[in-house]
Length: 468
Image (tube, rainbow, N blue to C red):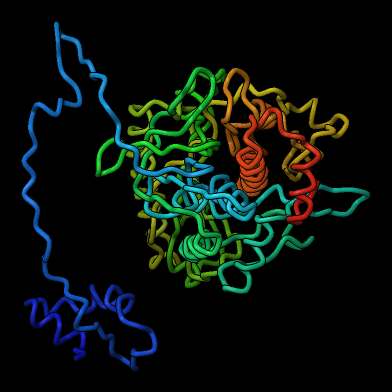
């Protein structure tokens, strides 16, 4: 038996809510059973409550924390093992996404832990939708240095219609992607690679035996649980696992940013763009990145004042302040003839933290190193984004001092004078792919990442079409 959406909602007493739930119903019904103007659900898709458990929680199980003499203590207690795998990646941004796929394609079991309900990190959730640092200029021509998973993602994005251009000379600076389409494509690629995906899970600690990392601790609605792994990849952006493992790092502050998408930008009739009714420049106007969705334009209010991206008080104040400033500015825009219909369609769910902890690795890529000879252990490249050259990234940059079985990638690499390139989306993807491939090879061989033969890693990456 099949019923229509309206009939189903009538049974629930929600007939007026058809518009709000139609999309969810469409996902439940098989696509081949849909007909024009109707969504179907199967009779077996019963949304009523079926399983009810009465949980008798005993205080003898032990409280999570307790107070004594005005201090708070967390008692030692057993942490349930939730999952075991070969490689666990923590952080589902561009770096973690690429790391997980690279490791899985190398033939090992992979788990990916992500705090939000979607992949992409600052790229999709932070609405940083421009892909930069993809090429470097050689002999007067731009040469593509971003390949591998990053280029595959871009190529597939073009076919899906979620990108405005590719990594050609015309768009070498900043092709722009659609946030929701990118989330969909990332889900698809992770699923194809058979990565075990754990959303709504926050990696908070590491499991160690001396200097060796044996897995991670994560928090979710199910409580505190453990994932055991042969190799761990820190793709948190802020080096959270490195910090908890006792690794060394340099902490920096950087200007915070906040991105929005403004709607109806294709309806602007004003003769002068980005100026108010008095002819003054808007303080933060939406960048015209030739977005795939013509009515949505990307806007970035930043870099703002330098802030500590690890301080929740600073971050909370910044979130409130940025949203207020955007709201007030758009209200002023709407007073300008030709801008009346512009409005905020979406604000980022993740504030733009550019840099916090930079790993003290076996090699540090600063500006001097970037302009010097190419390292023999190069495993990734970042394009030119202000240095006047691309950046060859050595494998040693992924290996933290003091800590074993932990590989770092993404915006925790580099130095203060190179972080503004290495933190960008595509360099994060390339270092993530290298970290994932290295973790897989080390897990297979049963060795520490620092003992891995770099030539075998370079070959594996070259075979995957990575530019070395």
